[in-house]
Image (cartoon, rainbow, N blue to C red; front, side, top):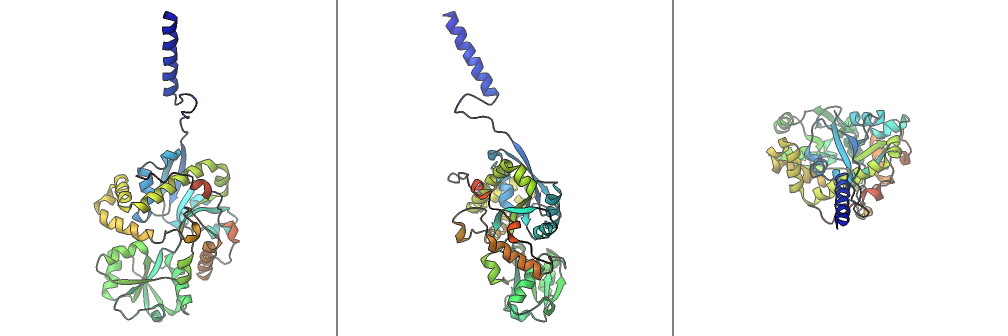
Length: 348
């Protein structure tokens, strides 16, 4: 009897020890190794146009995949791309205009996941004003945030489709926020060229606008993406796959529940919670350009050649690149299968 008691006690102690160490025998799994992924966020402060990223971090979607996601804010898309090119971070998040330039310089940077299929920029025409179509802007003043705005190449493409050139209009830097509102309300500009979520803000302040974009770019465009350098793609494949699974769940949840995603974002960044209705409205506006195209067949992160061919046309026309790099050097679809291997049937 004593021998049986001793054996039972020893078995119990062994099981407790194994549980504490994160392993309780076959079938129960092993404690997941957590890997850090550093992401360059291409904006100086967290914004509701990226609600899904912050909501996913707050809700633990990345941790579920064994990823400790570190989000590093930057001064813009060019800065974010520079961090990736130098190897300072693992991935960058946001617009991809700088990627072709690095590829032309021989830096092997590639998009691994696309999450916006139209440009974030559009031309804003004042309702009831003198300009009711793109062709009417000839000889008029168009307000932009700065003369270095990434909206300008897209504007140039929109003008080209209407048979106009950038030289046919006068660009007026009006800033953002209150300064831009004053310029619009005072009649200092005849039209404006801003990004989608900025328009939500301006329309909320009584400015009535009709938004116009390029018919061609509305069909396919590499708008927003995740990209990395080749050595990260080959050297940290498992970590990138885990990160992208977390990203897919974050995007799927935030698409399904904009209110819940905005609330989670506000928990992570309390400044967002001060005006949740506005923040949610901005996220819902951004969702319009993130709708998966029919060709994706439900595959998150989907992309094809046409998205990048149209991007290159815009950048080349705008003089941001002197030549077009081979399209196949700009992106890879090798991560998409793994990125979609996540259970989305039980979202919060």
